[in-house]
Length: 326
Image (cartoon, rainbow, N blue to C red):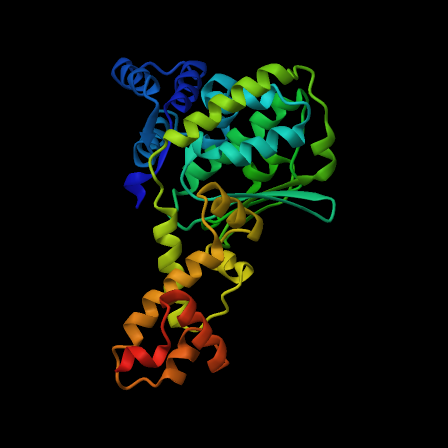
C-alpha cells in the first residue's frame, strides 16, 4: 500500500532551504533534491528516505521540528496559496482538510471542533511513517498555520503515535504545550478561537480561481482505491457481526464520522447502497453453504427479523431467498 502514497514534489524545497540555512554542502544530494522538487509528486517512501539523509547530514535533536520551521507557501503547492487567500484561519483549515491529498497523500485527515477546541488528526490506516516524518509534518502544519495567521500561535496539545523518546522536553519546548506519544492517531489541538482570526491577504476572487484549480488537480490524482478498501472492511465487519453504523466503521478506520462521510461524498459513494452490495455478495456466498439455514444467513447479514431479510433479498434480486435453494 505504501507504494501508492505520495507527497507533493514542491515539499522537497523545504529540505533545500533547511540545508542552506545549516550551511550544509553536498552538491550531489542538492542536485537530487532540485530534480525531485520539479516533480508533481514523489512517493512517500522517497520522502522518508530524503528526511533520513537530511538527518544524517545534520545530526541534531528533533531535526524534523527544525525542518518544518523553514516551510513557505511555495513548498505546499496550490494549497498554501489557497490558505493565504482565505478570509480566516477557519476557512483556510477547512480547505486544507478538503485538499490535503494535494500535499500529503497518505493517511486520512480529520478536523473536529468540540468543547472550544479544534482537533486536527491523522490516522494510521495505510502506513506509520515514523517519528522523523511525523514530527516534520506536524511542524510544517503548525508553522504554515502561523504564516497564514500572520502571528505566533501555539497548540494546546500534541500527540504522536510513535513510541516516546527518552526525553520529550525538546518537543514541549518547541510546541509550548504538553506532548504525548502512543495511541492510534497523530493529533494537534488548539483553541477554537484561532478559527476566527481574520487574514490580511484575503482575496475572494483569487480564492475562487485557486479553488477551481485545486478541484481539477484533486480529480487527476490516482484512484486511492477507497471504495474497494471500504467494501472489504464492511465485508470483514459483517462476517464478525460487528455493528454496521457509520460511527463504528469510522472507529475501525481510525478516523472521525465526519471525515468518513466526507470521503464517501468525495468518491460519490452512498453508504447504504455499498452496504447492500456487500450484503448481496455475502448472501450469494452463504446461500451455497447447505449447512446454513435461511435464518442463519439472515443473522449473519445483520437481520434479526426474517421478514426484513426476505424483503432485502427480494429488493436486491427480485426473488425470494428460498428460491435460491431450489
